Length: 304
Image (cartoon, rainbow, N blue to C red; front, side):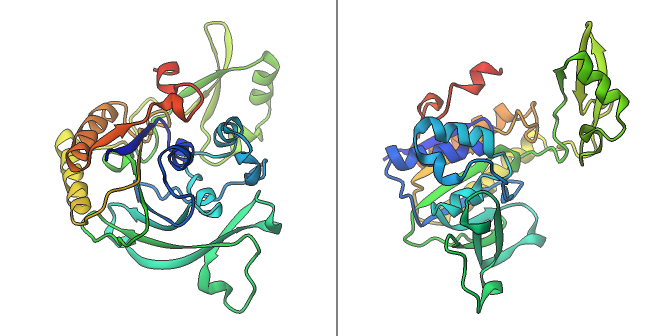
């Protein structure tokens, strides 16, 4: 049977895809093994404004929650918190960071489902865990390693930036603002957009419009991807060798382009996507799920 496969523009949309796979393709909503192939762990702890339990009251609320509350680095632990995954295997390149499975616990402060914390499970030994605590196993390996595969259902989650990544994202953007906001930014040396870590913002008048311009550099970052089509193909081959070592079929596959964020280079994402899907299709038959089935609109059409 073909594997439901979700192509998402940015990685937090995988949260919507996983829920859709549960409601439409038989993916269990508890106890799933997540194989996360990515340059980044994406295990950030979100600080929510809406309690996570309220996200599941309707499909539209889940969509709104995903786009308003989650981001590309903080969508996995909420899925652990609601019970979807109890094991995460992060496949990455750097062998120095390889780590055997360790038990972790994630919970929210005052059990409100708003602010989360994660600690190693053994660090809370002797104390009663919070009522909303979830435990999960976490390990890190390279594609030259061996996955831990048992009877649990599996979701395969792949980010294209695993194959070619800008360590400093290609993300120059401009926002038109009012004259008052323009002057406030220029006049205030402590404006939050100036002092927030990582911010590089300038105020410019462009075509008679007041604009704030983000991350405009006149040179290519030293963190820009140096990958070539040959090295990308090699990485795909190594990943597929890892998957073929094991006799398993994932219950769902999510693939994140990560092109709007700039982590996957603009010059590479189409090539990587094509080659990766070709390789996955040779491994297991795929059934691409239309984006309109699980997310609001189609960002790939709205933002070419």
